[in-house]
Length: 352
Length: 233
Image (cartoon, rainbow over all chains, first blue to last red; front, side, top):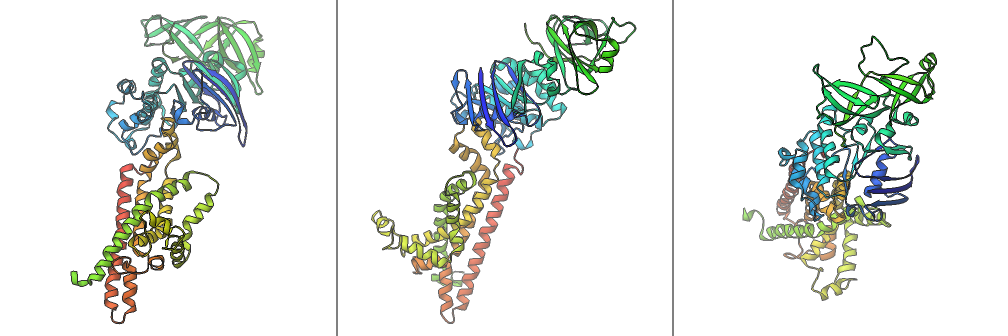
């Protein structure tokens, strides 16, 4: 567990945040320049802030120099040492921390680094470099892993190559991860807890699904990107290649989901891909229609409106026009139908 | 070949190489330390240190030699104390080495400082997060990556030491076999009528040594950079 309290005066803005990161992956989300990287740099001791109190598993570390803090840091660019082979990069931490490097074989297997060990960093691809950097940080035996947009320098296929490793890391390594990102899709997929930072201040911290469905954050999260996560249980693999998932508000059908029956999955539904109907729609190609209740209605500054839809305990955001709100006479408390234009699997098994 | 240069001439060449070698070797660690301080640390008096290091480059060499005489001469400021522990500079080859080291120092520091400044600070930060303290970051990351520049600086210092004349002759005179290096031997030959040919041959040796040192430094730096990789991954 990590407790952080920071204050720092920068040229353009003031950083002033305090939060507690529980186990699992905590994403620090915000626009560029919001102070995300400053936060983890301060945790690592690479940035000296005016005021800092950082407690890691009950030990105050903010007075320690970086090399004694036991943090692992994966930077945006891999920062591999060019004069060492991959193997020596991986073992670098074990020169200084006696317990480090014990899990060498396990980490190499986890990240698929075996074929790279003898190579020089110069000749690795971006994705390979970043995997080595993650392995190097893990092998320095850290008590917490800090990651600063580790995927942002990579193209889509490379991202897809690394994401599963990060998921395994979160689920298997058992160490807390502080993950800076401005990519919502990444956060939705990886984060257990989500922290929204805006202009040096903490806007919101909470479980990812809850934060993602908070309509008051839509402007920070970005209207187009705003969406929400709902949980669903895989109940059947049907003959026509679709999988049937049961949500709190009815069934959802997705192209074959590779998971075992009964698995709990997270679905990501972008707000702009939700349509509203007053009656259960007839003669429509959309398969996924959920019965929901309007919990909140927020008119934006432009022609748009954001609806918060309740399905059981979960929330779903819908972005429609104010004209539609008026035409349908939508009001808080009303029971309506949400027509989902797209549903994506956000993340693998989330357990229990 | 042996008769091409007089025995005294060869002696001067050997002495020059010997003096330059020790001058370079002994000043290198200090030059690396000072270069690192100037490149990576901010402290009170940094500009003063920078100026002090560069002073021999701009002062007339005879002044530098005279200052050395005042400091390390037999009756100089530190001379007697050093003599008590067995270190004597005045009129010895060690004094020639000291003068050469002082004169070459600014060149070495400049070359090494530039190469240290070129080492990516972000790699050093990464090393610190992996548990390396300041000195280990330097030994395992900064120094290996700056090595081409360090070697270039060392060879430059060596070449400068080979050619040092003014400070050396002021500080330790030009005693054949002890402090008469190649430049002072050339100067001595030029003072004697009819020795022009002897002087010209020693000049040729001098040019070959200097060029050789520069080419060696260039080749070494290139092969090292190739090994490390042109761009830092």
